[in-house]
Image (cartoon, rainbow, N blue to C red):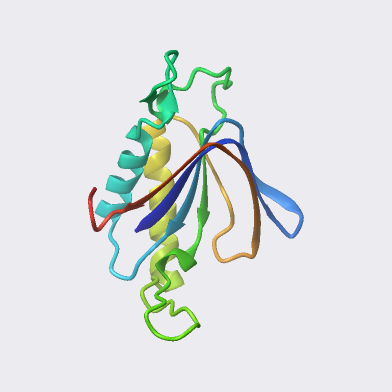
Length: 157
């Protein structure tokens, strides 16, 4: 699995004009599921993302994980928005048209995407907002910092 993680002040995803997920301060996670990924990778990636210390503490240092946010976020409000994005697995080795052969097929990707969302909810002890798998989505965000990271479960970095 490959994820682009963005620290955001707010983010929202819409499908056909309907908002399917929205968060205030927290993390926007664009998630690509690769062929051969497993539930172990979904769990590892979710726990890794939840533990990333990319939020500023009182001294202005990147020292807090999303679970340590104290910005007036009401209890029960999502701290993360997860959007499926198979294009993160694109290969541009040949020619100008990206190849998506490394992306998992929907029958394998959907259960792993849903598993990742569950693992992230457990790791953050908060609900997780989502887009709609396979839909054409409009994602809007206010990138805070900006802070943007790329994490790949197969590299385990």
